[in-house]
Image (cartoon, rainbow, N blue to C red; front, side, top):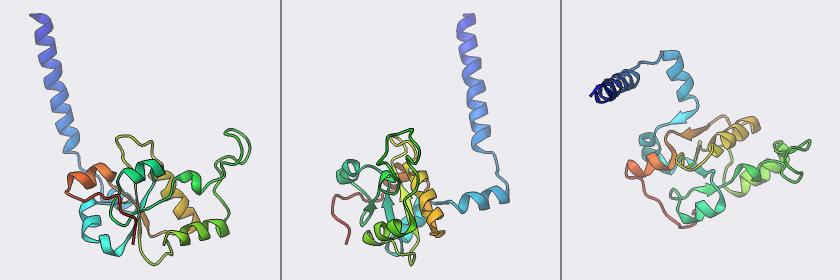
Length: 165
């Protein structure tokens, strides 16, 4: 009986703590900082024709289904992976002239915002690496999709295997 009571009390404490965390308010400064890196799925759905979606997953995952008109670049396409992992120069961002060609080839020209996404349930943060690479390159009008592919689908966003137009 004591162990059952302990389980019930622990569960109640965890629920109370979780609901408190869910209701926590963030400061205006923190919200502004967050908004400088992320866009909501609702915003992305409403502006889908005015942005470039960049799928940061592997080509194999991209080919299984991606946001309509999304282009695909994995971080390894933007970094030096010609040397072995751990050796000097490994994963260093490619020179600007090579990045310009890579970005240009997929339609990233700085005229439209770039929205990078991944599948947060299976990825390891590739969208963060791609976002960082875009910004280091100078494309400040680039953001990550808050919640990624999972949130997109949950909000009713379509997924396709069609090539971008």
